[in-house]
Each structure stands twice: as structure tokens, then as C-alpha cells.
Image (cartoon, rainbow, N blue to C red):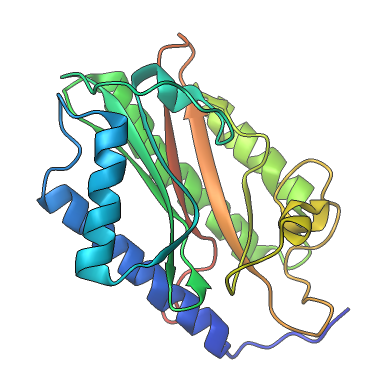
Length: 236
């Protein structure tokens, strides 16, 4: 087992700084009301690209911008649905992989445009489940990816939802992480990951995780998505 340290690494601090900039980008998206009825998913994607470039200096996105609304919010990342116009009572999910400097930021949130109580409950539960899983991860030094994945699924079912992802997160770090590295079972939070998540990498480096929560409602009508760094900022 590689050595561990209670002192945050420079990379961890830098990753949190990148995430803070991603969160600021999301606030700007909200302030400019880019997510609104009548806008198309593709139109929002283009507007976010322009906003990220002009106000945040973003030149690279390590994965395509994923804007999903209505029934599209139930789909997996790899699916490519046709463009859709957002409706008055929709739920909308954003998954952005912006790169700040040479560090990846992976950040996702969902928004309810109307007053539907079940959609609002789902968005609230996304954050609740994320925080619950974060507490488990921090309190469990030997937890594996398989165990955390199972807990995310159980927590989803306990609140009346199903879990919509094939995995619940992945490693994140300097851009670009190779596809082979990113897709290896030890580097994703999924059922075949038997490796301890707190273990360091092959060179003794800390490993940093993104946790993804993708909930589906039981009627088959909509879903929601939430993601950010699993470990909170130092001192939080």
C-alpha cells in the first residue's frame, strides 16, 4: 500500500480551485438565464461554450458538454439524443468538463424550471445522496469502488428513485487522462472495482475522485444528475 498523508497535496488544492471556477461558471449560467423554456439543448450548449471562453478563459473541454432536458435526463452520458426544446415545466441537467490550465473540472447540476414537487424532490435528493456518500467515503479508509457504488444505489432506492448510471464516478486530475486509465475498473466507482479508493497511485501520488449521482424517477418520465469532487476542500 502506498503511503498516505493528512496534508492536502498541491494537486488537490488546484483541483478544488478548478472546481470553484466551474461552480462560478454555473452561477454565471444561472445569472444569465441560459437555461430557460424555449431554448434548445444545442443552443444552451453553444451559449455555455461562448460564456466559458469569454468570461472564464476556457479553451478546452475534456468531454463534450451534456445538456439534457425532460426525458433526455434519463439517458446515459454516451447516448446522443436529438436536439430538444426546453418546456415550461422541465427538469434540465448540465454536465460540463471544463479544463482550467491543465486541470480537469467535472461539475454537474440539475434545475427544475416549474413547480413540480417530485422534480423538486429529486433535485433535493441528488445533493442529499451526494453528501451522504461523501461522509461514508471519508469515514471508511478501506472502502472500495464496488462498496461505494452499492451504497449510492441503496441510498437512491431508499428515497424512491433508481440509480441511472453504469458507474458513480471516476478519477480526475491533470488533462488529459488517457482513455485506458479512465476506463480501468480501478479508476471508476463501479461494481467491478475491488480496489480501495483511498489507496495512492503507482508513484505514491494521491488519487482524486469525482462522485456522480444520476437518479431516475419510477414513472420513467425524468431523471437528474449531480457531480463534483468527492473529497471536500481542505478545512470544509
